[in-house]
Length: 164
Image (tube, rainbow, N blue to C red; front, side, top):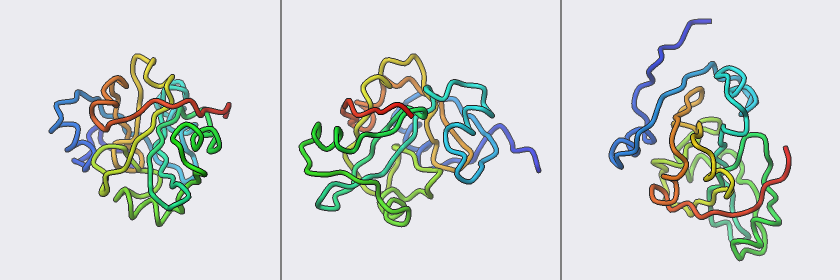
């Protein structure tokens, strides 16, 4: 397998971060289908709890929303729906998520999405000193201070984590 360069070309996510003046580090790994955050954290040598996944979901009216969750946790859709005042929340089908975000599943970033969507972040993510989150391409994460999320993408804290 060819070694990837340490630098990835610009993505809508990195362009968004640069325009917003948000500092970030770049972390490239060999993408594995269905490897998820367990694979990226293993390859990059970081705790899976600090790798944040970007999930595109929808409410009962098929309105899309983004949920940012620790890699080692699952989203309680029931708790999320209750917190955001929805009747129900469910994951979008991959092709629907791609249409809303503009990103391939496995490369979805909360930054620079095609459609503006409400963003919810598990509250404990904001307490971490640094997180790795998708940079807009499979096999590419960016390291950021999670405290930029509310200002950068309007992320609202929620409590909807289930143990992974």
